[in-house]
Length: 553
Image 1 (spheres, helix red, strand yellow):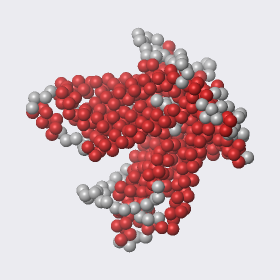
Image 2 (spheres, rainbow, N blue to C red):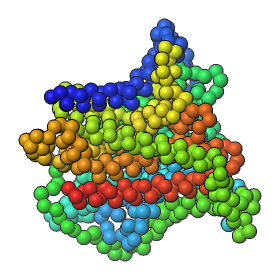
Image 3 (cartoon, rainbow, N blue to C red):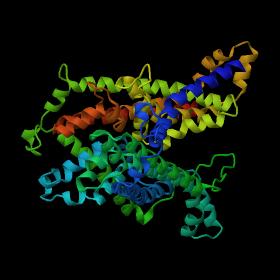
Image 4 (cartoon, rainbow, N blue to C red):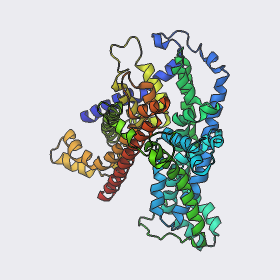
């Protein structure tokens, strides 16, 4: 039992440092306005003044309005496409899957800048057609469409996989017993896909309300501010309002937790066992006369969601000057030359992001594997709490984690602080991304029988030897896939980087953001292309590694 206790202690200590500390200090700062001075005096005295700020109801309302609108738009795009992909033999299906995966891999603030360069007055669209859509883009509707085009793939992939897995086959059974196609879809196929649909819509809502880049780039231009921009403003404008930022952070996290609660309520009692123990191989239904409309729908969405922003990003990266427009004599590699020039700040930012992403992937991979093993193989009264803490960052927006780390590590009584060092970024990234390896490892470990470990113990292997030589190698492919995913996301993370990056240090996302802010859009887009290429490559590798691990088991 001693090794299990040691493992439990390690997991408790790690989760306390990564998750509990930032969350605790956000709540404490929201309760005690003088916490930054090391005082617990005057509890809640600032709460009334903060909540009476006339801007607060607008920030909350705008956040909910934006989140719900993006969820609706993503559902309108993702559900029909997902159902068609799951039920029918759509021509070029794998191509559409790849095309719809790309928007999710493009950082939202980069996609927003791409749309601005495409649709603004004198933008690429006007150069090609004489028309511009700046009025539509710089509006609430424009913000919703840009964010929905970036996030609808979450709904598309969830619905298509859920429908294809079981709903299609059982819907056919319902039709055999006399149900019409629509009745079978509404009463069988759709209910079976409801848990996956609810989970995907929840992810869209959470990603929308915690996204900083797109609201800052687009929404703020039309006077539409949300909680995330309000929190950032309280940190950037003098005098700095730490209690106010903490209160807004608590409100933002409460909205995310309410969304999780709503999802659980919607899906409660709607889990169905549909497998008979024998896999069923079935062919997708032919589209028949609907093939041409379906292809038109898929291609139109692919052009809008993938091709248009990528062409805008690429055109900006490969043109010498924006004023020169789309002309052959304006094609240039000078932005890439500047990025790779000796001593360039871009190379330093890229090296910093790659190093931090590597450290985050290694840290979260090891911690996630140990957490999964502790929860499943060393059950205790604290196992459920550990499992809940491991997935809690899913409900903690990035800006809340950043605020919590700022508050936690700026206390005057601390003998040592990682604040204003690269360690603070590592802590932030690890907190935000820990759920990925933890859930991957949890799923993989549930499929590994206890007999392998028991056999090792019988033959004299110790606990740590068994863990190192048997359990971790078996978890390796799944955890490795999660680590590649963590690496890809950490290398482009924006909001925590904006608030926590030490003086004199730059990450890739911060470099790109500052290039946009300073007007060096070409260099920003050139670095964006490199970032997108790295992310796409790593996610392809993660997908391949995941499939290999499934076949190996």
